[in-house]
Image (cartoon, rainbow, N blue to C red; front, side, top):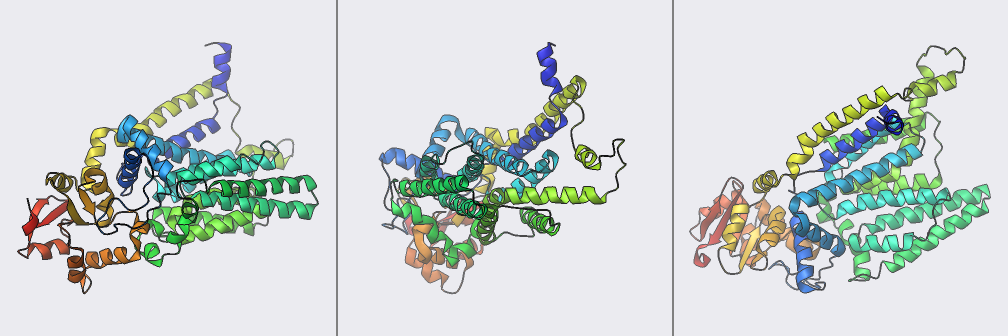
Length: 512
């Protein structure tokens, strides 16, 4: 091996090994099977955009919301997803969205270490933070928000340090606005950074920092204004407010509900919050006003809806990092350590977690560990979920594949009163002949249609009248659902398809 090669191997110390294994683990865990219920209508949206060569203004997929306004706020994200699917199918889609989650983890790690947290502790908290937000993982446009928020926060940090200007925010926020309406989180973070940093600069009498904060404020306003340049104008910008202010959506849809603190993700979020509380109790933590504002604002969103937890973890990362390091320092101050020969206890404690002196032999061992352990992670978790055969098996176990084929074989338009989580799949496989009663685009249907669906699904008193009012040609619900048994007991419905996942019933007078 050449001298340069030995030098490179020598520099491959345990800290680098741990960091690379961390990101390999996040990627492997994030490469989840393509069984997200919303994946399919996002793909269908991209396909529709290509077919129309334009943007739809009213609902196109259902029979229950005909003529309802439709704001496809994530149109660019959907178009990219469809393009990726056409290029490499579901495996490429799963791979790239797992990579986006990993990019978010990289940003989280950089934010933690940038706040002064030691690399080993930062790696542990990065994994905890990533898993706390794992309920939002999957191939769907909202994952763009995770990566874009992380990059935004790193960019704002670089601006504070004089390494980056402010007006990159203008095109950045515009691009984000067309990818997903979650760009408003970026606007909030940038605005709070400008306000908080400006306040701190004013208190310190730092005129240059005040000018920098004003530039961020102007750039944020410019980006917000430019975000109106989208196919739907102001409607796309204001879109999230409708969902966030709908009690029905908040209560009935899991991802919009508050975090479940009995789950692993919820407990990790709880642990991060306790870490902040304990870190503050040491009185060793000094945070900027913008860090406080960002953490508190995103905490409100995260506690209201678990889909915002990954964004909270990123926004709170500087404070989490400072609190984590404060706890490490507090522990080092109470744990008895043998005095070094020099008597410099501060320097000695700083060396406790530091990597050992790098040598070529240690570098080779670390490199071998990376190859073996990293390959094991990928082979055990990621690669199986990227294999087309296993993906199809996962899809068949989660969605009504046989029923969808039966609907396609009817050769005529069919109005289906379907289970909520399957609407997107039916749109993808059956549009335009199959028309659904509902899918994941709840905002298009409105509270009235969604409430009617919930009434039939729960068989509340009056469900029969609701079902008759919609006059569906077919009913598609999970096999074993009480609705299926009730309708099968009548002579007006015929079983067109059934398997362990789903049962499709068709009106006897409309059966092929």
